[in-house]
Image (cartoon, rainbow, N blue to C red):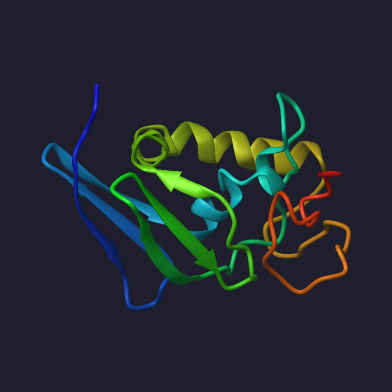
Length: 140
């Protein structure tokens, strides 16, 4: 089933994105959107290849850009700006937010990691890039 996104709102603090549909709305925190980024850097290139995102508790949304009639490009205050959040993926995040958030917290705990400090290896750049530029760690 396809749902029509009627409105996208970013709050003044830039830490909450609200998606408005005819049948309701979802308020998605910036941290949640960042750790569930659809980018290859976060999700990897196949099942089980994703990278656990740590230290994203205080991340903010620095920019929103519509991409055609199908997606949003969200840039974050930590420099991450790759991956397109298509309308179906955003709806999925809204509908499954409680389960996805608990799964994220469980994975953090299992890895003895946390939301406050970024424990990922330094990549030698300050931000940006994405798959294709080598910044996601891939070879192409």
